[in-house]
Picture (cartoon, rainbow, N blue to C red):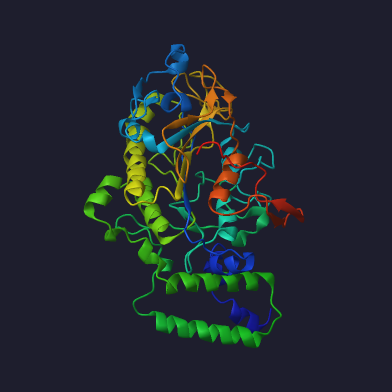
Length: 454
């Protein structure tokens, strides 16, 4: 590599391949629709217990039904867990999809299946990403979903899922075999200063936009003199850099400045990472971002045995003391906020984990850490909470058997859910991308959009 090429990629090491929005939209021909549609995908990392929360079986034996009691909701005939009282009052907005199903019972590969809508491509022995991964829904949106000028089509808050001690993120969260340049934009910010805006999205006070524009013009001239002979890495950096400049020029960081919200609103969402991320997600919906993924985060995310919604031990104590109170604060607040602002009709909200939990307490399915007080992984039947986006609220979609272990009506696969979300965003799930790993054309999704829940 000669001196000119080195100059043209100065600073490459700090750049992210995910800032690909503006040029990608031009390349794919995507244009924002007259009425912007969004999807907020809340991922309940770890796998919530369907039988203890939203698909309860009060007539089952105690080792199945557990310790919790069901309570009535705002919709006659539908009951959910007693430790979700606020959510119960908002069920008129919700569709409980009790028939989610797949076959993978290991965290990482199961996350990949839900994130990508495809069966995991490798053996279920690793949680870490590889170049052979299927592209994430967030990456498909990054490439194909229309978005307002200057804003990325796909954003992830507040972290990419990654187990402690591992060097790479969990599989299924990147462009994978479609290309890392289509990674979504990750927003990691500090909660103590009321802003989720990463420092790289804010202009330095000593370097106003006019000065930055001059630097950009100088770099463009250097690149022009370097000539057309460039490597793929250089070209990808150029596109990413252009998108980064676009984010700065359009003051994207202002969209993430939560201090602009009223004290009452911020208090309603609460100080947790997931609460603040959902508040930021609402602001991004207002700005016209198509897909916002919020990955659940709580104080147990570094617990190698019971991470977040994982409850191999003390299932009921963790649900009652930590998970239910936090979820019951942030999720109903988010739904109400969207509804009151007239955004719920055009915004599809989806909340689910990578799988459910075993129907029977102490039942072994994958992890030897499971105790009589806990539930192991269970992918055969679990629940997704869906609201808005034209989906009729106040209903149950699909059904499970007497112990919530298997689907008996209207099965929904991760592929179907992916196809549904893409369709809602105005993206044809049947169109194709180029698989750079196997050099083949691939459909964005092999699933079928759900149409009978409206």
